[in-house]
Length: 458
Image 1 (tube, rainbow, N blue to C red):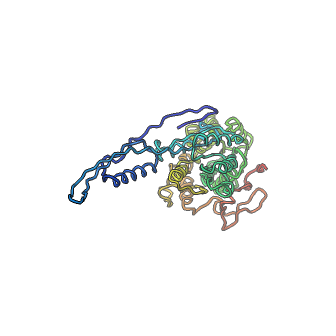
Image 2 (image 1 turned 180 degrees about the vertical axis):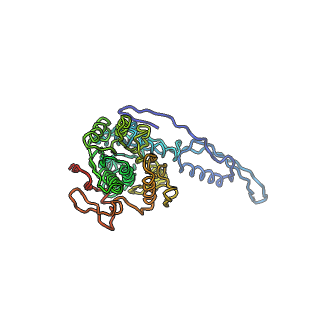
Image 3 (image 1 turned 120 degrees about the vertical axis):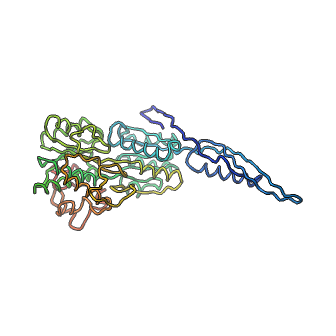
């Protein structure tokens, strides 16, 4: 595995597992023996990478001649060349050490490498790549021989599509882009994928609404793109559901935009302002560090109850008191799918969009008391639930989590809003009785729900 930082490449040799070949085999003399050994060599060379090995096949056969019949034992030995490792390159928008988005993708890379076989794949990443420089990062990975290149930020979409056109003999996956930009109008050697969080954000909202004492929740947002907007809306809908059920009053929500993905100081300042100036006592966020959770923990230590969540990775250690639950992603199963497609020459252009229940062995819902909510599974799952969440709301969270596995319940529905139509800030009904937000509405969401105070930046 290699890691690239700037113009430096850091290499690390990966261990090889012992070759498991055929130690005793049979081969017929002459042409037959050559065919058997050739077939074995061809099969092994066509599978995932293995070290060079000597394969010996031995067979006893009867040869009938013009005058005699005799039994002959023939041994044929051939060296099977090692197949080439699959080479995969990743482009990260932030540093691997952010403990959020890019760290999550790198955790997924390592997971996929391990499942595929570390002696069968060589993965490389370039971290902290500005959007303006992604084309150069992709080119460097192509020049290093990467067969599969995965770019992991919304703003990388167009350069990735352009690279797919330029390099038709390579395969590309773009994370978090539009279907029209990737699996729609892009070349056939490019796919789109995403591990979607809006369902988990709604569940976080239920926890927020169950605990808030001020009736005011806050959100530190990175960029006002549809991905972040739908997460904010889902969080606020969940918070309103729980708070209104508790008190009969609607929740109030404030959003502070920092216009950066990785900016812990900005996130910290925004979080403090939401607490001090807006009276928020539960904070969610889309910023790739634990900064917001750390602020909440600091207030807890000072005797003020402020709560927050994990984001992309389990961040409990950064806020052991303030942490309620959170959204966690394992990108590994998605990446492993693409590894296998390229390795087996079975590529197809797809738009993978995983939610609760995907990539798990048992998708049927469980009773709330047996729910797997809070345990690692699939590609998206909840962080453990803090016992401070009242038991009746823990059961509600688990019930909804299980129902989402079968798509019985969806946050963007009248049911997710206490039977009320979902309206935007102008009072326009966006989702009425009997409707649910479909893929296009979710993927292109450019409006805030009515409970949010600040207008959406344009």
